[in-house]
Amino acid sequence: MTSLRIALVATALYIVTTGPAAVAQNGGEHWVGTWGTAVVPRPQAAPGAAPGRGAVPLNFNNQTLRQVVHVSLGGSRLRVVLSNAFGTSPLAVGAASVALRQKDSMIVAGSNRPLTFSGSATPVIAAGAVAVSDPVSLTVPALADLAIDVFLPGDTAASTSPLTTHNGALQTNYLSAAGNHVGAAEFPVSATTQSWFFLSAVDVSAPAQVGAVVALGDSLTDGTLSTPDSNNRWPDHLARRLMPSGRGKGARPMGVLNEGIAGNRVLSEVVGPSALARFDRDVLAQSGVTHIIMLVGINDLGLGGNGLFPGREGDEFGIAYAYTDLSDVLKDNLDLLPLGGRLRVEHQLEMFYILHLAPWLQITADLQVIRPTRPVADTAIIPAARLRVVF
Image 1 (cartoon, rainbow, N blue to C red):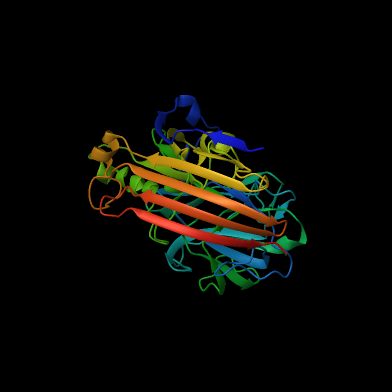
Image 2 (cartoon, one colour):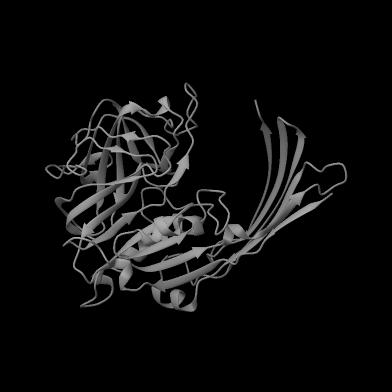
């Protein structure tokens, strides 16, 4: 019998202003997020398995990660948040530091600051937990790059604990040769990756009236297809627009936190936790958040099922339609992306059929039609076929 599954959740963009309770904090300093990312679990690679093409191996063994983040707000004191949110066993950190990034894997001389966590330079982050560093004094300009080093002395492949990561960083990060190279002026790069690992936020100490806006979304927010290492996602443009120099005299700066996950959905957990499930961690728990922009739902639209033809009950099919639009206010006044004219409604249609020939063999036919947002781009028609063999 043919079965159907229907999901109808409209793509939406909401701008929400939170109340004063959202920014209430303990202690004398007012902390505001200047950078953030939404983390997801990544299963361990099998021991001895070859890495994917152009990718860093999923496991780390006695190595240092140097990860680059592009902040929004500047400040003179900051703290770093490491995350083992999806780990099922504790994560041992042998050392960590933060510095101003000069270019590539190089740091600005004299800017490196060792990090401690509740006074410890070698924290152990419990499964499902985060570790917030003790504040360090470092003058960070607005819209600057930071290099955050994390030394992992153990072998992450020694357990089945998933790695806490953000896959679509669109930022080149660096993996060292063996050993502790935290804060090294010349970082011994053994590989690069376009993902962030065990890193979720950077906060700065700011005046009480300064807040942050969280951009919660899917691939449109995450920056899919944006040029790597260019900081060209729409939240990056928003961060630049929200600097006082772009808003007139007397304007207050705001932090911008990109909490997008490519492929994310509102209700179902297909790529990472759903927007509903992660709202508390990725929005409400962020430091100093006062505003939220939600652009999510495009991946929830569709119709699908099993057994479209008699005798083929094990096959799968799907049809999905989506459109994306921005309000006239955003089009007229924000002008976030220089894309060759006024942005228009984007229409997307996808159809696929998965033929299950055997438990180990699948053939998929797929057709996508996309009328892009950019007025200077032509409608794309993309046919594809995929063969999957399971060993």
